[in-house]
Image (cartoon, rainbow, N blue to C red; front, top):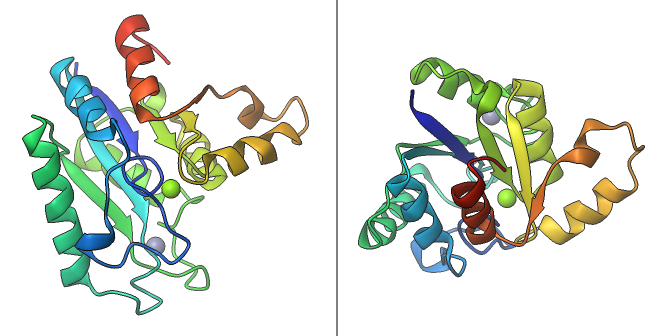
Length: 188
Ligand SMILES: [Mg+2]
Ligand SMILES: [Zn+2]
């Protein structure tokens, strides 16, 4: 059976920006993230990305530019021997009432259908609380990284009631430390 991982993009694979990632030039990988993906691939993990890209709805960049950004991701990752199977993105804004913008789980369901994957044991790694909420809602497992918005997210999890399921998710410094952990233990 294939092992799968779902990654958020901004703040997990690459540096995030409050001004959005609007061009290939602005897309810069976080230290160790591409190596981590390649190491996970080598250990048999297949990886998809699920990402909110409301910059499209906001008119900050167009689909061709997003495609160029993702070409840069794919080609830089390939230099490390890594591969991402598919990048799912929500092009909508917060007021569009779509079902694919995290914290809603629409893209998780689409991935599960496309690749006939049961999400039960699949980890989704994110830096925002809404990544974790979407994973929870979709029936996947989740892990938080402290890169990107992760430190802020960690603080906001700490004030949740103790019985909130988001309180018990594992937290890692970055994708590289998540990968080290999962590759040495077999689970997060
Ligand atoms: Mg993010
Ligand atoms: Zn959407």
